[in-house]
Length: 592
Picture 1: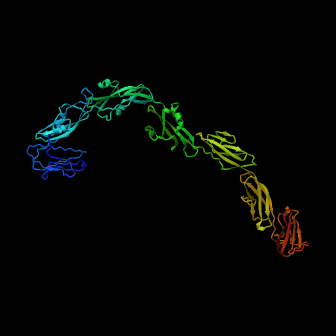
Picture 2: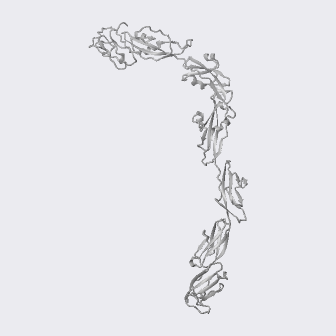
Picture 3: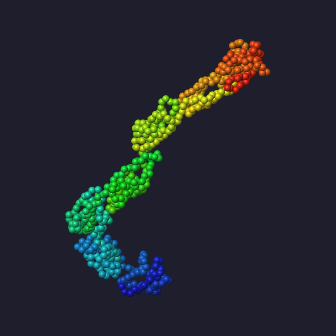
């Protein structure tokens, strides 16, 4: 190109800044820089018609955009534009599969020119050759790299030019070498779907035809293709895959892989965890690893990895395995098992259930039982019917033995088994009871409205008490506010073991009497004294003079003294002496 007539450079230290350079009417220098203070502009050029000038821009550091503006009186010839063509892709069909082949570059010319006239196009291996228009390429051109950039120069007859580029590429199908196939199957031989290898042969299979062959020669010549499925055994078989461009039958590539089957080792279905619900919550904690030996059923544990899952999808995808220590979240709950053979990557499936069966809940028909020691017949105790089996602590047992007869107080228990095989136990205590023994009846008498009876009863039972006046039983053994007279006391065992009774006498005296021979209250008499024939009753006046002694069996005192003289209205005193009882003294009124 010759020596430069104008040269402007910026300081490399200023790389990364926006810099302007050019020619103008104010500058006088023809060279400038590098330097920190230069403005980058140089003296203008007086151009003549037909002159050609070349502008070379060289960026020393990095890359960046370039904009070109011009002013002045010179008229520039019409510019020319190189239109961008498509890249060229050819198959390596020249008989030498080295990745290089011939390209017809002239196919790009019409695209580069477009509607422009008075132009010519040349092709070059380097940008520099294209820039100065040297070393044009001939077509067809044999590529030297893959891919390779070709530079095109379009030039008008007035000397204006423009550059563009495109790539040429040897485009035989770019195949990967697939890994050898170890096909997992339960039986040998087994049909293997050959198309399943396609994703390992080529990244994008669209636009290609796949065929499979037993030999390299058949694959190269596209002869004797085998079907989409092949019978595999445990002996490796080499399969050749031919991949052909569906638009260019001569554009193909061949790869191969070895295929065989591994007969899957079968997982044995273990027994499930079938347990009884001891906590009444439907849950149980189990160690899933306890099932490993059953699943392997003699297979070497070191050759396999066993995982447990709570869903079929998780097992299929090998995600979210559960740990060996597991507490069920459903009842029943299925545990899905995946048994992986480590060496081959083959796996088999099985499953088992966790079932938490309910415990039976036996209940006695009474919370408490009482056995009458004086009973002539045994007592029946029972729990509900409907369980599969009953075992009593008395030694009795049977399928329908929900009730037994007992004749001794104590603690009785029964263990019941339901139809799930779950057992539960319940106990009940049988307390003793018996008819009461009346040990003593304490009487407070001669007290008017304060007369009372207290019954002292003994026995193992709990007792209620009643008098013959109304036969209403009460918890209390004391009866108050009683009149004088005979009473029958009843003591009843609350548990139904019987009733005992005893007669008791409350003594009291009339507080007045009217001996007027009218048939009403003509005698002062203490009811019940005939029970005490040896008793002594003495009547006194208010001065303590003995007036009369009356017999317990007599009608009573008629209001006369020993001389049969009627005594006047007044208060009189008495004493009663009864054997084994304290002497009682009181007073009453005689009214006439």
